[in-house]
Structures are given as structure tokens and as C-alpha cells.
Length: 299
Ligand code: HMG
Ligand code: MG
Image (cartoon, rainbow, N blue to C red; front, side, top):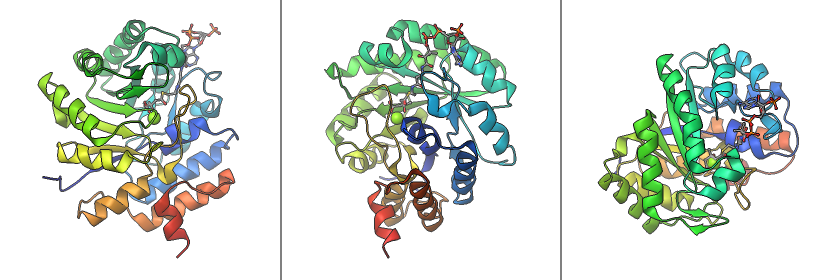
């Protein structure tokens, strides 16, 4: 069966913009997030408190967050890799954070300058301190399906890191197909082995990138397995600066088109969201890669 309702975890302002070459002014980011909220999105990943040299596009995080103070009732999680990032976020009143682990050694090194174990050790005090402050922690896991350096990633390697993130106290796990190579059979296999490893499906979210055009099929497969939280990026913005060949996330509009057709509610207004992504594409100076945004904009 399929769920009646899906919660969309919007990642455009973070996963989308982190990869943009042109620096987007902080005022434009704030307007983008306000428009996403006005379209009905209730979880909007706003930015990252990472090293500004590693992700220059999000170096304005401390200026952005106060511009969102009026958005009560909207969850605004941010990425934090370490205690320094958590401290910067807590000072600004952030109430939800995400750590980001890797299932592979190559990506842990490229993205965090750590081994998998060192990265988990770095997250442990972050998760504990956040929990102590009443702050929820999402755990991302990158390279759950394939890795640009290592190829296909063995399922036990993925489930082992998932278990450790759960045991450390992450309330939600987002399964990342960072380079978009997953196909539906692989999604079924991973969700089944997580289930067997005792990770409840209710604690899972899926995070698909659309590199090979598989993101919607993979999402539908996950929904059939009971997943109800789906990450998506308005207009299909995105990628990851530390993973070669990572292109945009599943576009929120493409996801909405499918969910509406299936009669699954989200609370998001497709027309307002499409207008927002078309506006953002104008700000970035190139068309949105989302099929749905293009189709609806040409009507
Ligand atoms: P490092 O160089 O090993 O850092 O980087 P360090 O711990 O050795 O510290 C070096 C310096 O950085 C120190 O300053 C620290 O204070 C400073 P110095 O003493 O030299 O002047 N520093 C910081 N400054 C500001 N904020 C901080 C911070 N931490 C240390 N939080 C580090 C390690 C983790 C910091 C670095 O690798 C980093 O920032 N990485 C972030 C990479 C990133 O953001 N990638 C994109 C997000 S992941 C993704 O997109 C995948 C996802 O979408 C899911 C999917 O699709 O798979 C989530
Ligand atoms: Mg991503």
C-alpha cells in the first residue's frame, strides 16, 4: 500500500545552493525560504554551519538564520559537522540539526577529512549535546548505493553505519543516493536489510539525486515499503561539491506531481512552488532542470 500523507523535507536552500558557483545574496536566500514556506513546505533545510572554506556558498549562515525568525511553525534544520558547528547554530536559536555520515571511506575523506569511524566519533558529542539541549538530530548517510570511487556499496556496510547513527541518538536517518545511481531493486534490498537489522522504517527518510533519472521510481519504491518522509529540492537545484558526478536532487515539483496523481497529500501548493522555482532559476540565470517546472512554466 501507499501512505495517505508524505512529509517533504525541502533541501533546496542547503543541498541545492551549496553547489552553485555564483554567490547568491543572503537576501535572495531569505526570500527563497520565505516563498517555500508560503507554498506550504513545513520542513526547510536552511543552510550549513560548516567550515566556510569548504562550502563558501553557505558562509553566510549566521546572517541568514536571524532573517528567518518570523517563520514560526516551520522546521528549519541546519547541517552541523562538529561541535563548533553546533555551537554556532545553537547561539542563533536553531532547534533542529543534521549530522552527515558516509557509508564509504572515500567520501568520508573527501567530505569530512575523516575516516568513517573518525567522523562518527566527531558526531557523537554533537548528538549528545544537541539531545541535551532538546534539539532533534537527523543523521544523513551518504553513498548508500554507489560511490564514485568505490563503485557499488555493500548493504552490510550501509546498515552498520545506520545502526551506529541510531544508537548514538539520531531521531531520523536520511538514506542518501549522493550520485543518483540507485535503481528500485536496490532500494528494496536496502530497506529490507535495514528492516532486518532492526531499524524501523518510520525513522527513515529517502534522499535521491536524479543523475540517472531514477529518483521518482526509487521514491515510489520507498513509499511502497512504508517510508513517509522524502527529501526533495525545489526546482531540482543541487548536487554535492565533494562528490564528482552528483547532480541535482529529486525536484520537489516532480515529486508533487506524482504524489498529487496518487492522491497523497503534502500540504504544498504546486502552483506557488513552481512560481518560486522559476523565480529562483531567474536569480541563478539558468532554467530549472525540473521537468514539471518547465512544463508548468510554458503553459
Ligand atoms: P578540517 O579541515 O578537518 O577541520 O575539516 P578541523 O577540525 O581540523 O578544523 C580546522 C579549522 O576549521 C579550525 O580553524 C576550526 O575552527 C575550523 P583554525 O583553527 O584553522 O582557524 N572549523 C570550523 N569553522 C566553522 N564552522 C565549523 C568548523 N569546524 C571547524 N563547523 C570539517 C573538517 C568537518 C570542518 C570540514 O570537512 C567541513 O566543513 N566539511 C563540510 C563539507 C560539506 O558541507 N559538504 C556538503 C554537505 S554533505 C552532502 O551534501 C550530502 C547530503 O546531501 C546527503 C547526500 O546527498 O548524500 C547531506
Ligand atoms: Mg544530497
